[in-house]
Amino acid sequence: YLHPKRTVLLYCYSLETVELFDTSNVTNMGYMFYECTNLKEVPLFDTSSVTEMGYMFWGCIALRAVPQFDTSSVTGFGFNSMFHDCHSLTEVPALDTSGASRFDSTFAYCYSLAEGPQIDTSSATNINNMFFSCFALKSIPKYDFSGVINANSAFRNCKSLAEVPQLDFSSATSMSLT
Image 1 (cartoon, one colour):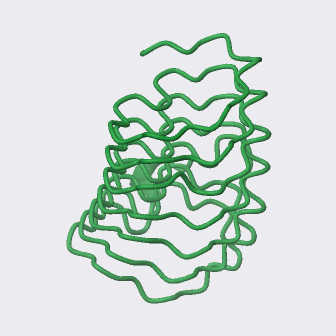
Image 2: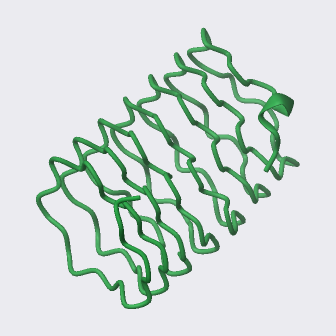
C-alpha cells in the first residue's frame, strides 16, 4: 500500500469537490481521499492503469456517490476498506472487481447504502467485515463466495438486511464475529 502520509489529498477536511485532473499514469490511488470528511463528489478519473484502490475513500463521511470507475486492473488487496466509513454513500455503481481477492471492510460503516453493489467476487478469499454496520442495507445480489475462506462479521450489524440470496460458503473456514 501507498503510505497515507505520501498521498496528495490526505486529511483535506474542508474539500467538498475535486476538479478532474490527469490520472492516466497513476497505478496506486490507495488512501487518495483518506479522511476528506466533507468530500461530496469526485469526477470520473482515468483509473484504467490503477491496480490499488484500498482505503481510497476511507472516512469520506459526506460522499454520496462515485462514478463508474474503470477498476479492471485492480488486483489482490486493491479494494480493502475502499469505502470504509462513507456514511452518506447511498449507492455504488457496478465495478469490475474480478481480479481482487480481498474485500475486507470494503463497505464497512456505509450507513446509507441500501443495496449491495453488483461486483464480481469470484476471486474473493477474504470478506471480513465487508458490509459491517451497513444499517440501511436491505438486500444483496447473489455474490459468488465459493472461494471465500474468511467471512468474519461480513454482514454484522446490517440491521435492515431482509433479503439474502442463497450464498455459497463451501470453502469458508472462519465465519465468526471477530
